Image (cartoon, rainbow, N blue to C red):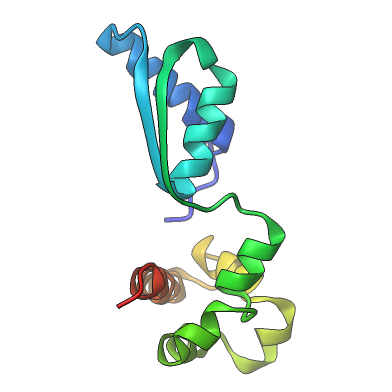
Length: 135
């Protein structure tokens, strides 16, 4: 969970290129949704000669305003108030002002132990899964 070692955007783009080479594919369609749209764009920029088409959906480019809207209580919380309450409840109140991304990051990296890591992982995943579409 939340592994940062050899898990950067550049590392993932390089992995896709290795897979393409292993499969012997000259050019391929690259598809991505949400964070995957950023990854697909990154791949296409790095290897334009290898991309026949680019299909993107639910574009999420990780800009500050998108991160704030989705994770820091500046938008999505108004659309999904009950889910927001559960998401914020996983972080002690005294840490709320420091930012939820940072607070979750510390937990997901295991800085508070394995039990807290798993609890944060579940809360983060439930949040993302429950607000990624309108019902």
